[in-house]
Image 1 (tube, rainbow, N blue to C red):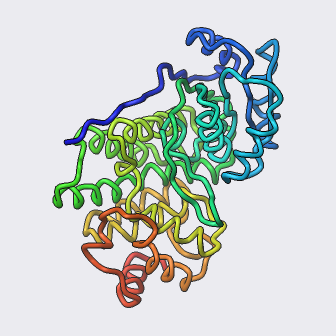
Image 2: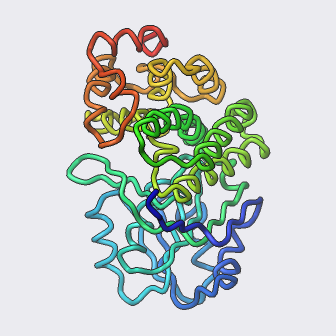
Image 3: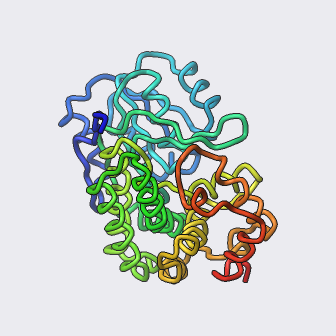
Length: 342
């Protein structure tokens, strides 16, 4: 087994009203100097201005898209030398924060405003390059400040997408086990923690959908745990298998659905192919309010089939798509059997 460096956040603060403690957290970590605060157009008002007001001096910018070009634009636009980056927003902002902080070789503090993805603490960033999304490696944040009061008021669709992203750990870990059988590296601890995160979200589906404090806290902690699994293992295999490859293939074909939504539907299909509890996955997604059909994703049945046919080539990772090579006939069978084409 080859050694790998495990980098984890040094502090994680989760609770109601903790948005006012970002500077306190930075001070505790001895992060001094001028921070670069990144936010989105909407998240600037939701939390970005609050964070900026906590510091005597800041640099700031608005993230418009999660692309390498945008990361380069921000690095070149910064007038000064930031000591660290604070990313205040959803997946797009935090992913760009990872790339920008890595480019400057400075620490990153993650301040999520929506529980929409498991990249809040992970070392992976989902960045679009040449029109296609790629999972790139970057340094994970040194701290996370997750204000439940803000997260509870995130759009319900984004909350459901975050839940679906965690639930997709089910098929991802099953794919990882297939790779283990071929002699590839596998972490029992990371895999079990990823499955536990998915199970907690599935058990909390109703309270998550209703926006209850306990449900949102469970989801947030599951997203954090899911991201930590990737850092522990030094690979995203615990949370990204054929389900994510299917999602990236949909992106390349022009889907406008959210990442987690696509991964959820992908998890249903891959669990069916793996013969591993696809009905449980589908029912949990329905209960949390996430899509379970092509129609729910806003894509055509033909696009789903094309994505399934292309998914295997998205990434060099051994999955169920290697065990059961995808054909149009198998794609149609799986989608009809699971109700994805209902």
